[in-house]
Length: 88
Image (cartoon, rainbow, N blue to C red; front, side, top):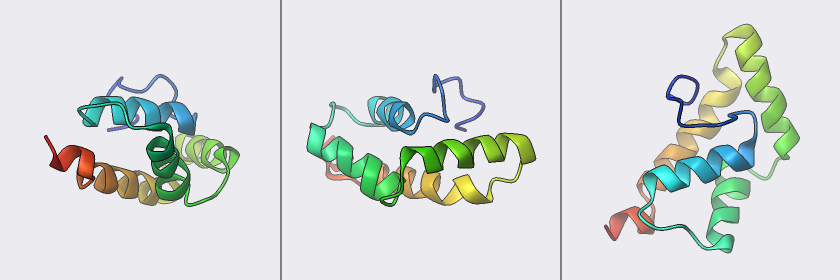
């Protein structure tokens, strides 16, 4: 979905990816603290944005989704079960 949906301007940019996904899935823009939670704790699991960049590009080069599957699935699951979605 991330690679082929044309929803994401640059999937290797973790901040842009999370921003574009929250814009797409959530009815309202999350607060800065909430966005930082989705980005840093949920998606990056407290790793750096550079780690995501290298993981995404490694996936594109190898077509092995192992390194990107878990952060993406965790982010999707957390967003879809978040209080922001439950209040819709």
